[in-house]
Image (tube, rainbow, N blue to C red; front, side):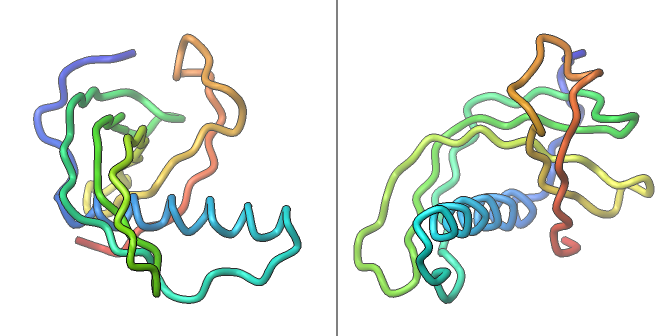
Length: 123
C-alpha cells in the first residue's frame, strides 16, 4: 500500500538511520570476513531525497525513502556519494522512528512483509 505521505521524518532521523544502516552493513561484512568491527560512527551528509512514499509496516505507519547521500567512515579521508533505499517505521505515539530492513527480499505487497527494526535516537 503506497500513498503520498503528508510529511516525512525529520532530517536528523534520516541522518541517524543512514549512519545506522552503514554500521549494520560494516558489522555484517566484518563478521563474514572474521575481522574486528570498525570503531567509531560514519559521518553522513548531503542527503538528497528523490522519492518518498508512505506504507503500512506490520500495522505501523512507515515511509520508504530513496535518494543519494555522502558518507565517510571514521578515519577515512575518502567521502563516498552513494544511492540509498531506506525504510523507516514510525512509533505508536508518532514521536519515535525505527530503521526497518526487510527480513526477506521485498514482496510485491509490503503488508505481508516481515521486518527487522532498530530504534533510532529521538529527534
